[in-house]
Length: 385
Image: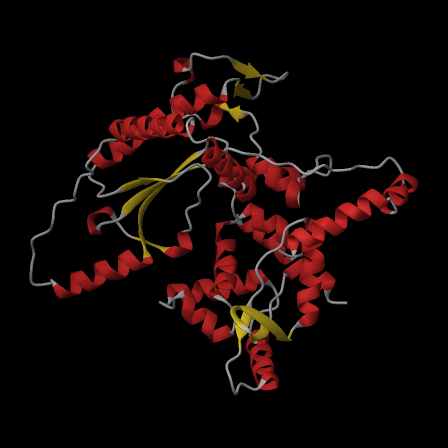
């Protein structure tokens, strides 16, 4: 009966568990319905997420703990967008993630997921508040660049178009679509490969993705060098697909040691976040500033040991050496390949067989098939490992 709520919002109230024999084994004291609802949802989607749990100690009263957790959860706003507004205000007031989690009786991971809503465009947040978008879709949208969010929002607002959701949205965001010429940092005249235009000539794409990334990485390295020449103390280029979480950083000007973070999406889009420090670094900088107010000597920003092109040179030669070494160790190479497949690496794609049926009769026949039942049993056994 709580499955619809868990499907829409996830498990909000932590389960109560206690040790059961070994340090890594626990039994559920309170929250079995939440556990089985989440398990059913994981079986539907083929993947599950960790559940929030509160570990009881000897002498704890289960009823009192459960009542305390429910009371803390009741203090939260009913929808996640309102929770984001509350948490964001607390962050600006100087509270950290651990403080917020302790105040409301939830895990730090839950707080981080709520704060991630700040990565969304306001229109997407409002649509989520109105329950026009489900939680799984919103989770993937928090991983998207602003340009991707705008593209998705245009599809969502057009009744004649289909906006991908859930797992389909994940494929749409990270499945390796054609790369538009609009995202190139370099002049398209310098691209030696073929550029393909659509039938109306409004959009064009790079036909050779590898050649595009070669030119784009050169342009990113040049942009990084330009920032360093301009006096920025540190410029970090994140790996493609890695995200910059503004809620975990503080806005800091260049003259006070602010850094630049460059993010690159799987579609080739580049975003430069200027003037940021992680909250830990910003706190350390404030402490140092308060302790050295009498010393007026400002330290000159340190330069990195390697320039952008030299770092690119070292990375590529190191990659070539490791790849050549793998030729003599096929067992290790096989384990690396399996690890990429399981972990969902950007270098390896696994797509589920959709098993579409033409009508309800075929669907019913497939559901009663002995082979499907045997496969489902093995699958459940594997998921239980």
